[in-house]
Image 1 (cartoon, rainbow, N blue to C red):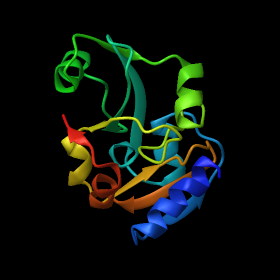
Image 2: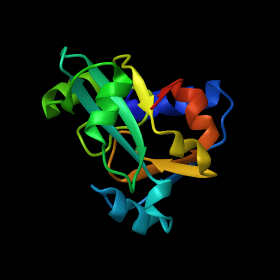
Image 3: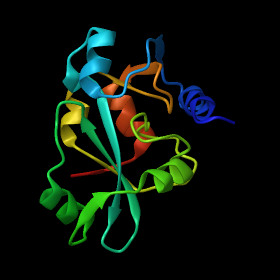
Image 4: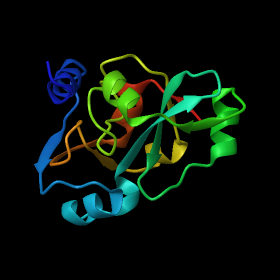
Length: 150
């Protein structure tokens, strides 16, 4: 099962309405927002990070936000977090950096989320490919991820 198929399966099993949008390949949140005709804050930035203890985590942010490294490390309970190596991301998640979905990864990874994500009505994320985006209600994202809010 592909990452995209896994995500669709999870959405269906949880009875979550979604829309699939196909578009030119996108590699950044500003371009994704432009292609979808939405604000950058409605797009999801899913970053795979590595803790000082070498644990991989996923940080889910609105597309218009940058990582607050100190706050993230504190929220995760470690002294330092950095970007995970691209090859480690590909192996753990099932896709390359730049289109990591907020859930449905091949390996179960702890998910941490910015509370701002749940304040939107809808959010848009890539399902492990650069040329498609899913639209779901923001509250459903929290339901699917079961994240720790930081």
